[in-house]
Image (cartoon, rainbow, N blue to C red; front, side, top):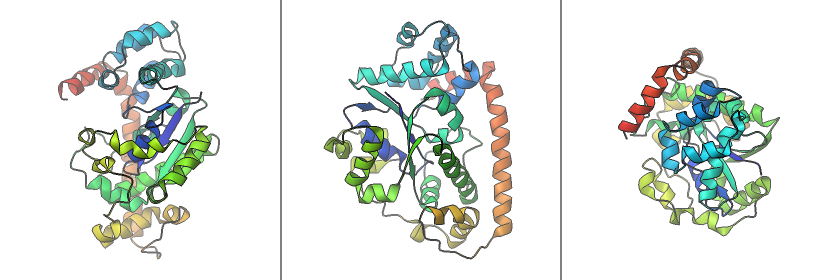
Length: 315
């Protein structure tokens, strides 16, 4: 059966949708994986089984999922495909929970759609989109910051560039893949009807338990998502009240065209701050390009293993 992949820019409702889908009796979606691009860069299309499994022993996320790398080894031929190797991890996770299907939800992969395609051929993609101004405000208000990452937006301008780039890339990707798009605002306002639509797309029977996710989620595990302890409700915070007008104008100067296409009203329909918008696009695009070039080199070097030791010790 096909894998289920939740697509979405950070702070766009991906965690809420994942919680709803994971509450289904037949579908298991673990916490964000992060490791697909790392393993692709290190092993490519035809991994050597023992080297691949050795890397799994170093990944903290695999340990957190309760997947034993030796069980992965037992399921793989000496030279599996990348998809076979990756899916064996997810399949073990799902089977341990008595579920027949598995999926992934990792917003980082909006920058690695090609790797998703290699890991999960034939997957069904559910893309959740949110008003980028609300997503920007939500991300920048987070108190917990991720580890060193040059691709992470540092301000409203950065986020607008990233949001536009990633949402558009997912839409283009969706033209040639099994793809369903849903708005976050619609999901929280009409959760049952929207989930029924998603279930039809995924080939699942809708289950009322999907709306009871808040009874099974441990909110202490989601410091950045306190609303997972509640039934779906629209965030009372809004960019209209919380975001500085100058920041909203800058966001719209960069990504206003896509906001309008997605049905979001613009507060500044007349183009302003064009020079600043062009500068933000150029700066973020250059930083992302440098980061994308450097990361594969680091992942293939001994530095990658040293970083995994650091991550494990810092938790």
